[in-house]
Image (cartoon, rainbow, N blue to C red; front, side, top):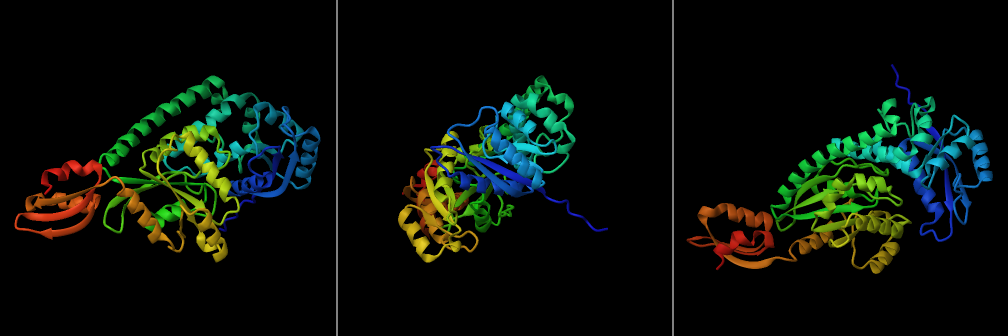
Length: 423
């Protein structure tokens, strides 16, 4: 038997160019096209309309709706994706303006669909289901016929609300489902919190890796720890956070946590739903803000990540800009970046370039609050010597008749263990 690959759906993307936008509509549509590709469809057409303010009925003008409907028909498009979030009434009105065989989605629905496709852990799937139901609730009147129709039998958008029964269309049932998911998430969150507290109580220096989607976070943690985290040149290739132990060059053990990627116009429902995952960032001692140095939208990506970090209350945590993918830059461009972002570290997670510089900065940050101790530890307390090498920065080590003499920098969390043996 020969496996036959199903043909990719054909999509048309639509954006609105309004005065005062902080991100060019062309760049936003380019990213939307990458999202469509990640969801498994092919972009066959792109449209923009310049408006002073959105049309309250259809977001874009009625003439533009007719133009896109005609183009979608001639291009044999299966789906039209809008770059802005549609209100329930706008979506319903737009569906009336297009052929019945054409699905209408907005950026939020598309991202939720991608998250449903890539969520692998129980917590990740619950978080996506919660965001989907919260998005669906105000759209039940206008959306259910759209979601339940035969044209939603597969492809982009079909994972939206996957597995839902028709009874759950009722608002009361959707609210009940949201409550149930929240309750289940709270249980998962409590288990995760216990595990997190266990890590935190050890006094280990905690590093969270955050950044725009596809900046190379998973590649970085794989290079450092051989974590085996899935990575691909796609947006939101990984959603579930991964924490690994890592030994710095001086022997100190720290933890590295890879987190879900951020994106411009990240749906609020997703930020809220993924709060428990993003809490890994709030508990960090240092955030490595990984940036794709090869992207033309670098400054917008940095701004988008800073915005989300502010939303989750992580703006006060020390942060280090890590410019990744420098192997894709020429010397002149790289030199200009080094001058412009002198506080940053420049690496290539793919080739390993710059890793020594990165680890030196992390080591310095890990030792910033440490106190210098001179101790003599009895031979009967060998576990303290092991603790010193794992959790502290040992400067010198020698042996006397009574025990092991160490000169070391000790983090505040471990001072109580070494103070009784101070010389």
